Image: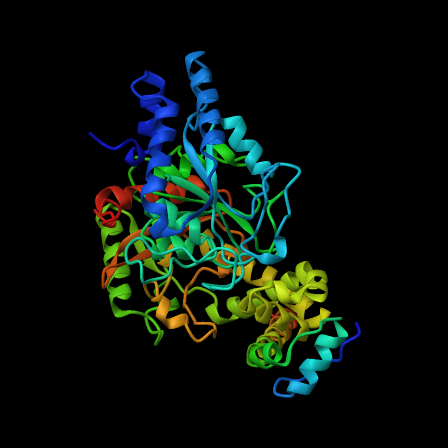
Length: 454
Length: 64
């Protein structure tokens, strides 16, 4: 019999609705998992078991009343990156700067979680202010990669990735400003969905860069990610993300952005092999794979970096001026680089952001979706970070924070026992299509079936 | 705008220090030194963005 924590959200929901499992039993199973594994993974930083069980009891009451037909998340545990405001609890943002900052209101997404009847298990770790990491001078130590505890999870949604990959929760919400949902999802062998810009509300979520910040779920499988997205998203004139799950890919045209990584000196050869194999697998599923020329990747990265650093400095300038000693060294050193930028630089970057978005729209106009690697290597070891200097972790995620297109990352295999991921990029508000493609791929391979040995 | 623009390669440690002060930031010499290379890289990226925009605008203005 499958352990309750390992049921998909749909399976757990069915068990809750037919009475073979209660929300309290499901919550208790997750609390026990956290108790058993969190000491090694360091994913959760704040869990209040009594508050969890109180929510679960409320969910059971709603289930008993039959209030469940339109609430697929009713009684399902979820976790939140510690950037989201939950009234009455501290939003630490992984920083000593935020000590004692107790939220007075729930973030909009938290309101959505409550309306959906999901059970908030607790807060999970983040790199400091979603900026840079891993670092050891912050309130919480960095989470560990469940596939190899000596390796990083990636970030900044580090706790979200470790919690899901470690089997502590099926879905955790994170934020993605340059890849912070997708890269840790890829590094930890799980699914990450960066939706279309502003489809999940950012209100009540501590900002890094308003123009680039996205809220998104990290989940154990594509269907789980799609269900969470549908339950918590803002309304849009678009099909639900779950609408085309289990549908055939026959006839879909997928543009393969191979030039973005194949000849990069930093790419792991096994990642190229895995990505080519993933494209072949999609072809076997009757999708038509077409090489595409994508706009210059390096220019995307330059534009994104200018916008991010300018906007992040604006967010932090006051606190940097009054309490610089409370920042972790890596975060402070990153933030102050923004002082070299001028308003003209930022204006040019915003103009180029529009230009590049238009170019990407034109590429996506010719196909149903794009595919490319998520990260060029598997997760580096913690040992690479010991001298305090930033370590370059090459990825191909940043462009879609600039353009706002939805992106799903799914596992595509391993290099030296560490997971790799593929991005599936859709047209705006086309979460349904990328989830359809991702799930068909997932169901046709065993990459998502293999779990870390914990 | 209060800060002058610095062509790539002219962001010295002294200039960076003045920029930080101009923003009202008191940053230790160690942190300034550690951030200098990244700041130079960021400035180079910003200049590249400006050049790309000029090229894009020139393309848009070119006769068909």
